[in-house]
Image (cartoon, rainbow, N blue to C red; front, side, top):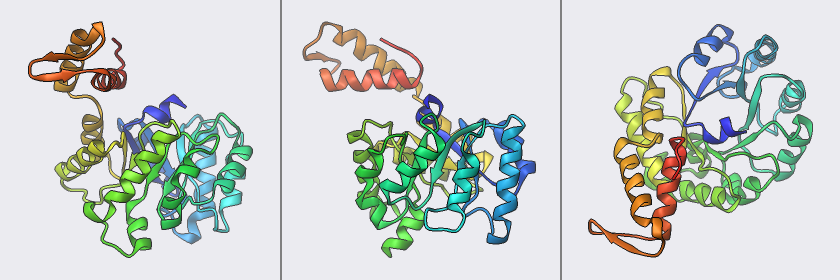
Length: 271
């Protein structure tokens, strides 16, 4: 559960490309997401599931993105994964039904984290309900499908409300910050880093990747910077006595101290 909750980067790999599974696992991504949904053509779905099961049975470890609840493959996907070793968690695309997530959790067991992917207006409207389902470890965003469902451009301005809604829903349910959607630009790591930095400012704490070249900028962005760590150490030192304190032109009080502790926690440190 902690591995999923703390993941900065989650690298997608198509389920019908088993030759890529091991490479993805050694890519430096915090978690790998083997995809049975959009990354796999309809006539390859069943063979892809078989590849995933075989790899997991041989010691592989990964999140698995199953097919959507309303598809012909959903039930077979999650029943096949039940009790399977190496399943780090299950990503549920087009998530909009809390009861479906409860059923999935009952099948998989309490030890398998569930990550709903908010990709529709209905899912966004029910984000708080989805986040509150037992077994849900983290919300995630699929901005391209969401924009298509809303009939808007997939840019930042149009989806600001959606991102903020998912962040708030996560907080209300006591979940870690959500996982940001993919960056489709593959030949410019700066674009991915900029997208990650934007999502981080809104309260996201991780991001999906679709190419190994995106992992380093994602991990760097969502991991505390040296400046953030130095600031956090200073804040905790100055604010150790409690109350509000002025230091170097900055007011340091309870909320500031909480943010400093969160930064050090992401780095594996403490006060």
